[in-house]
Amino acid sequence: MTISDFLIIPATAEHVIHAEAICKEMFESAKARGTGIARRKPEYVAKKMEEGKAVIALHKDGRWAGFCYIETWSHGEYVANSGLIVNPEFRKVGLAKAIKKRIFELSREKYPKAKIFGLTTGLAVMKINSELGYEPVTYSELTQDEEFWKGCQSCINYDILMSKDRKNCMCTAMLWDPEEKAKELQEKDKT
Image (tube, rainbow, N blue to C red; front, top):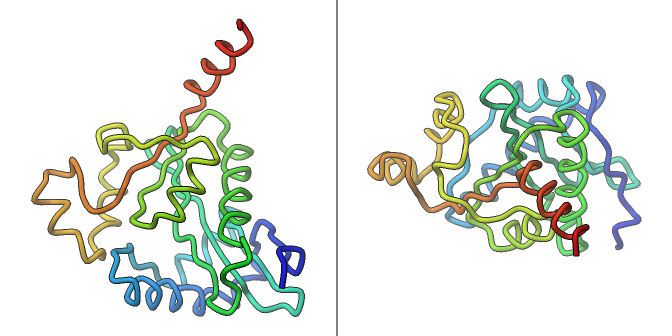
């Protein structure tokens, strides 16, 4: 099996049939790894699909293979790419990287001026984010939108986050800032 066996596209209403299986796998995968994840309901994931704020990977036989969605915060100033999951049947072929790249592109298309961020405990996701140009940051550089932080309540590490006054937790915060990237490009052009 290779990456060419998959279609990686923005999700639509026709993909809602996969929402329940995606949510179940998000939960089971987090439980198996012993890591925290903000739990999502199938209705929430379905809404992201209907709004065009998600990417789904489908195997050529039609089975869902992976998923990720977009969240916006602080009136569109910040975008998070969340809920990255790959169906266990299709792991180890580079699907997570391809999905993450496509959701990043979709985020840039929809919100070109937004800072894109993620929180993760996974080394593989940190590596993918780094390849996309994200940089590790302190939590103070993320959105301070209360609704974002409410999403952490279903995570097993929520008590740690709150005991540290939301300054840090078990997750690594990573940020891609379009203004910083533009400055870097200008500096490169000068040399």
